[in-house]
Length: 105
Picture 1 (tube, rainbow, N blue to C red):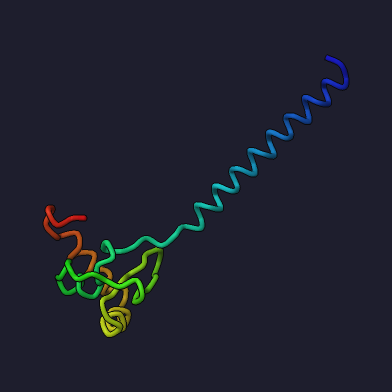
Picture 2 (cartoon, rainbow, N blue to C red):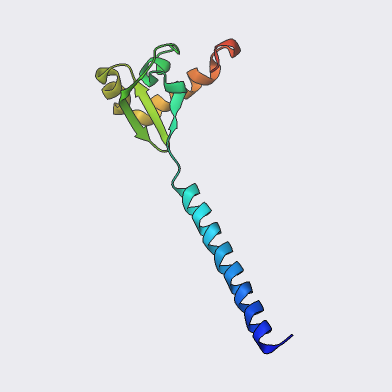
């Protein structure tokens, strides 16, 4: 190969390396910017914690906590839920997982 061909081949390799690096960093960046996941199929988290898995939450009354968005039917239920959010999430998770198979969304 001529000297010009070698330079072109090296340049081509660098372009491939740079593009690969760029694409990998973009996908890593996207993975780090995860959107919060709706908890309990958007049912009211306070109601779920109380054993009711059928009361719908509202998009206007919600709280995002550790990559999940929790929805509530009233502001009062939201306020009561967030007072002890970790233990309330734990209880609601247990109720949600124990619901009948036919009731799973």
